[in-house]
Length: 261
Image (cartoon, rainbow, N blue to C red):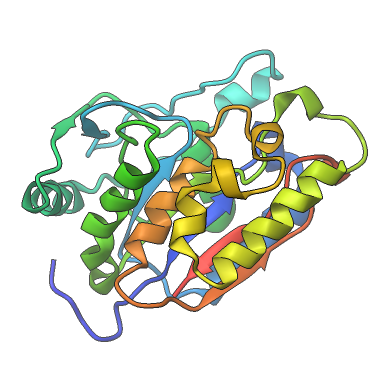
């Protein structure tokens, strides 16, 4: 994969929503607008909250069925397709980058894109014409996730969009409840401030430094892809913007999404 001065892509983190996001015209529109504002990637490396496997695993490099990893939704959501091209060249490059940092990796050739990957992609690249590769998170260890992102940083100069997909607040006890609780606004404000300053120490130590962290993230796999994206942007001090903000259904799930240039 050859670099070109015009190829450089940001690293991003998107709040991805449940499959019902596909019927949320406003949010779909925000994601589409964001994609149009960025350069078109040559390929996408997706890190989703919904795939944790050790060692770090590379998903299918040829099109395989999506992973409909959700339960109890209307049948139409299980019929969603996203036939993006495979990305074997990207997979080979990722293997090499990980090996150069002594990060173990393996292949999972039957593993398709999960809903954390394909739901935002349906909105952002609806033609499904950009090659996509999904990469697992090895485990929930902040330093290890950040180091994984550091290893992937050279991809940005090769036209690859390093794409973390999760949620900055994710407490299912508050799903579908109207009203945004104070703990959610406090955590969201902390995240905005820490990211704006690109305070890596704070981002890695969020469980101790962020207000209401254990309420905002009873388990934190949805925050984890942010640390990979931050690592991929840490080769300099990135310019941080928030292309999408607000709250899902005016509830406890922040839609805050992050672009690191």
